[in-house]
Image (cartoon, rainbow, N blue to C red; front, side, top):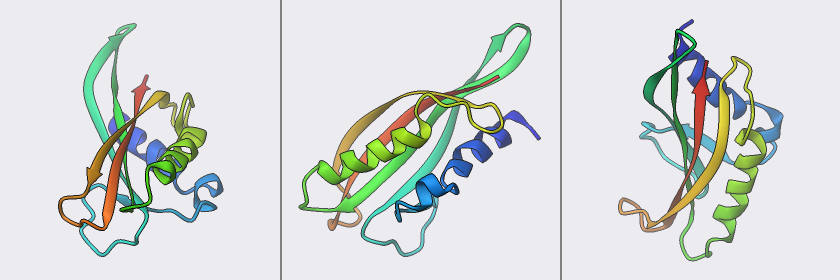
Amino acid sequence: MSKYSQVIQDIEGVFATSSWTNENITVYPANYSGAYTNEFVKIEVVPSKPFDNYSKLNVQGQAIAQIYVQTGLGSRRIMEIADKLDNILQAKTLSNGTQTGTSALSFLGVDPDDNSLFRADYSISFKKY
C-alpha cells in the first residue's frame, strides 16, 4: 500500500472507532453530494508535499474536518465538536504510522449553499514517514 493510501486510511479509520461513532455525528467525504443531516462533518485529506527524511521520501499535509451545525445556535457546538476531534486526532500516531500535530479552528460563517448551516474548518497537520 502506498503512503497516500495509508494516510487516508489512517485518518478515515479514526472516524470508524467507537470513540467517534459514540458521538453520533455523521461523517461524509469532502466530495459527498447527497442529502445531509442538520449537524455533520466532512473530511478531506490534503497532502501538501513530499519531504526528504533520511533518504526516504515521505509525505506531509493537513486533514480538514469541515464542521457544519445549525445556524443561529452560536459557536459553542462547533467548539464542542472541535474538542471531540482533538480527542481522537491531535498529537496521535495512527495505525499505519501517520503522525498528527496540533489543530486549528477557523470559523467560515453561514454556508452559501444552505443558509440553515454554519461552518467552521478544523485542520490538523500530519506527517507520514
